[in-house]
Amino acid sequence: MFPVSFGYYAARSIDEALDLLTQHGEDAKLLAGGHSLIPAMKLRLASPRILIDVGQISGLRGARIDSNTLAIGALTLHSDVAASEIVRKYIPALADAALLIGDMQVRNRGTIGGSVAHADPGADFPVILAALDASFVLVSRSGRREVLSQDFFVDYYTTALASNEILTEIRVPLPPSGSGSAYVKLGNPATGYVVVSAGVVITRQPSGVCELARVVVGGLGSGPIRATGTEAALQRQTLASEVIAAAAAKAAEGSDPDGDVYASADYKRKMASVLVRRAIEKAIG
Amino acid sequence: MAAQAESLAVSINVTVNGVKHDAVVEPRTLLVYFLREDLGLTGTHVGCDTSQCGACTINLNGRAVKSCTVLAVQANGAEVTTIEGLAPAKTLNPLQESFREKHGLQCGYCTPGVVMVAQYLLETNPNPTEEEIRHALDGNLCRCTGYVNIVEAIRLAAEKMRSQHVSS
Image (cartoon, rainbow over all chains, first blue to last red; front, side, top):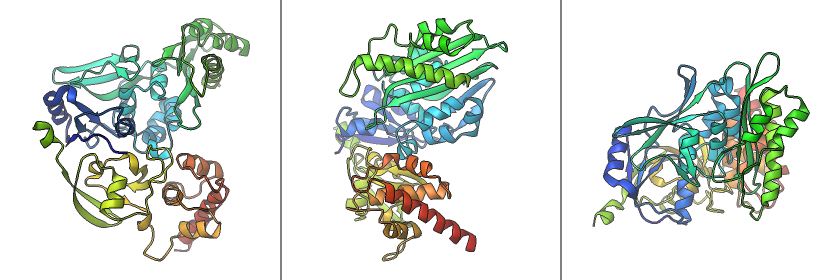
């Protein structure tokens, strides 16, 4: 399988990539690791006239702590997110999520920025990043803006990124003390993509009472969905197993998933409750 | 006119198994076809062509990747190792020997990719558990063996490579 012919430019800097984007506009797509874009091009689901390869731009790889925020460069490989000592230390759930993506070879090539910019409804990072209240740094010739998860993921394969912008960094606020987070997934056994997944962040007072809960499910719609009913049922509660189970039972409230050959809509809703329960238990365990 | 000019071929320089190659490729050329058809290195196989089966696995700049999902132009300036580069002609490295000894293959189609993944695993983790071996093989499909002998071959190779390391 071959993509449709295209023109190729390797950008050496963000400035150069922005110039090329300005020059080619809607005809161009950015290429990072290519592990979403190249398969789509081979299947002729995408046929951009121009590829601007940003994969070799320096300074966009790795994780660092920047004033109570975990900042991850957009070109950081999934395998490097999984192995990063900083990520493991501060937000292990994010490293866990990275390790559940695709397979080892895919993790060695795919990038966190590419994954979120592609916004596949079966992707892992959008779900855990939405639970962590992450924001996305977008730069263009007219400046820099930071967009929250809730505004970034717009629809199937659609984000707030404009055609003249480049995603450079993912910023994750460090959860307050007393917090735990987790990401769990039911993957399609053939493709590895999410059937249903759950990302949670739970903050408890020293007494054990839940002060804050962010619960996000994946696989039930076009992108990550906040399980607000579950969150409300956890607030100000001591998280005994029956409280968790009752809250998790609300995980699919308000969502309307499509069934497919692998999983019916009803099964997905039921699995959302199971996975949310497991994620909460793991986050507080 | 502009589109015609834009899709013109690109010059690349890639080091494959220690040999430098200057080449001119169409941007849409996939790395696996560059290796197989331009360089004649047909040990790297094309299985599913959709980045699932792992038969096309090679090592790119020190990492095992699926070469059906990399453009040749993305490998410009890179170091590539293919199955042909693991040992001098007509010899086997300890991993390849172990696959022979443990009968870690039947039809052999998936084997180059499996071996390249195993080589990368043992370079990064010289003493993997069975679970770690199986997790590493998640992206490689074998329809013959049931994986049992593949896992045994990799465990044997790990032992051989560790004892070589100790004795040297």
